[in-house]
Image (cartoon, rainbow, N blue to C red; front, side, top):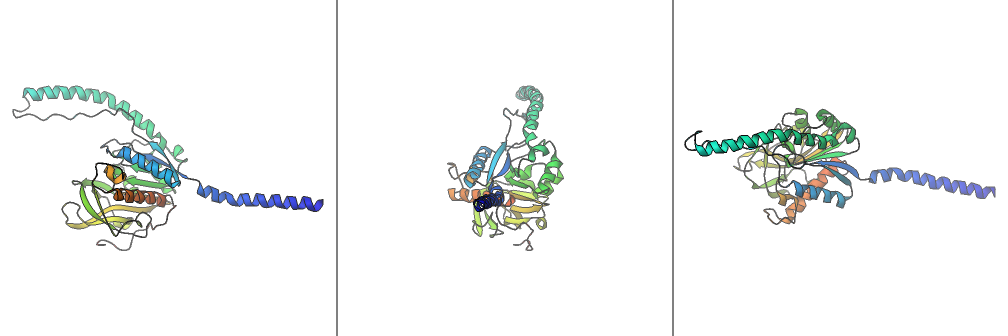
Length: 322
């Protein structure tokens, strides 16, 4: 009887030990939690609803992360444009009539915009330091303008302390007046020309965000030209060796990643057009295959930033020309 009791106890202990050993694996398999920010206070891309849909789809299909959205409050007031004087100058009757309408619309905007900005601030409270403790990473998807975060420096510190930041397209057209954000993301939107077909050079075929792409990846999109960019501080993923529009030689970054303190940053400037995101888009310049490749590009970039996919984040020794 004593031997039976001893065997039962040993068996129970073995089961308990086995259960404890599986806990780290279960924790590692638990999906990461991301916040996707699509709020804009400047230009708003028409591709944002499509991008939101695709990011939610990638999260669900991969099973590696979940997404919560920080979205634009409804009924954003539109700032009216002042009319220009007609052929006879500012005394022209049509101009005076247009000015009267403009001044009336401007009064409405000046009254409504502060209320709408309060709604924006309320939505962005999800990026407070207290709430960010519940998340592993943040995506700025086609954000623009100076977003009224509860604590901008606190957000930068949160990434630096071991979290993930991912940006698509106009994420670099955000916080132009806040240098710590520019230093974190690695570059700042300067300008762009007409949408154009370009041959992106795959700068790291071994990286998860690029391993599925050819040596030269041809896409049609709005191609950003950057300022505040230092190649020695980023790990290049995609780039051009000539100006996207006039074809003059130069170094034009398209996508990169970097280590930021204990955190990781992934950015791709592609994603202006709906057909870059969605293979089912009807009005398209890019093939459905290009959209699928772009989805894999951002999915693997997200996973890399979350430390769930392989790839180097240190600046390459090789500099331009590649």
